[in-house]
Image (cartoon, rainbow, N blue to C red; front, side, top):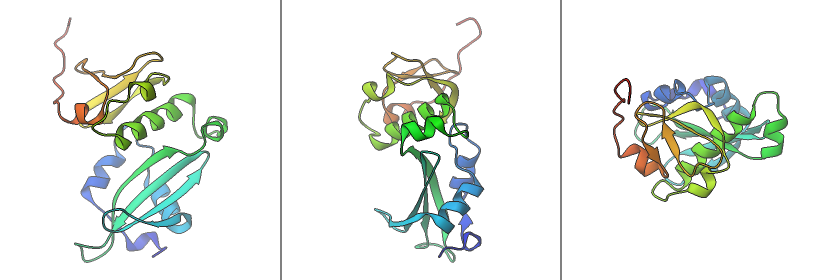
Length: 168
């Protein structure tokens, strides 16, 4: 169970590896499987959770519908903001990106303006088809491509990104 080579990567997970603002890599998956805390997942499978530099890496694995166990998904959460800001691996934008992404996922259908407002995300991260950023004081994330503003993950994932025409 603690051997990362036993787990295949799903296409869903491979797509997520390429998204800006995900901060999960094959190395962090391997580290979490080898060294992380093992937890039962609320659906099927298991979660491995590993904290490094104030950030928790969570990896979800399953073996219910496949011939071998697979890595289904993975994400990051801020475990300790002060530790994360002091860690050489992260800067303030990374820490805020992780916090906003986690908050959006925790309450997918609920608007979370107060959890977005204090954050600075100047390097866009992807959710659905949108590339999102925010500035301190803004109670929303904004798509850099289409200009739409969102306060919940459900709002983001339920609307297609239609890039603005030049000059708009």
